[in-house]
Length: 139
Image (cartoon, rainbow, N blue to C red; front, side):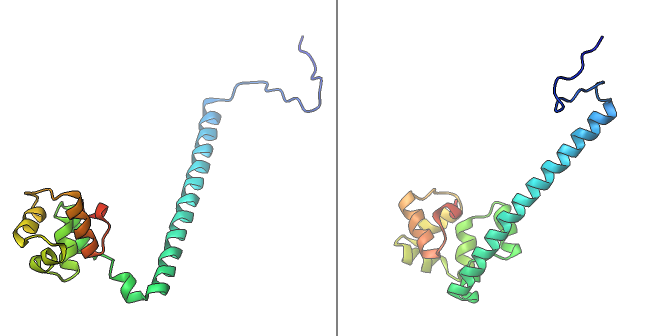
């Protein structure tokens, strides 16, 4: 003989959920999780867009967008081409001009761009400063 509930708030489950019911419950939770994830991504993207718009307003659109790379340049980066070369060309600098600005020889800069020399931290920092690019983006 089963006992009666002692409280009105007690809930009794008379049977285990079927496979289909459990599957639907799991899918519902997965959909809810995905919606929360997308909402968070949208919020992060929205903050990034607002920050960029503030930066463009502060610096002027042309100056702020000078740091953008075209799709073709991004493809070259993704293909493994030297980030230093890509940013140097994007800034309209020759190897000689950048080398002079950094204080190294053009041949040494060329060897760094071609991956034959690593270039020390100080040199990479100077290259980044000359190109107005964070050193981490030149790796």
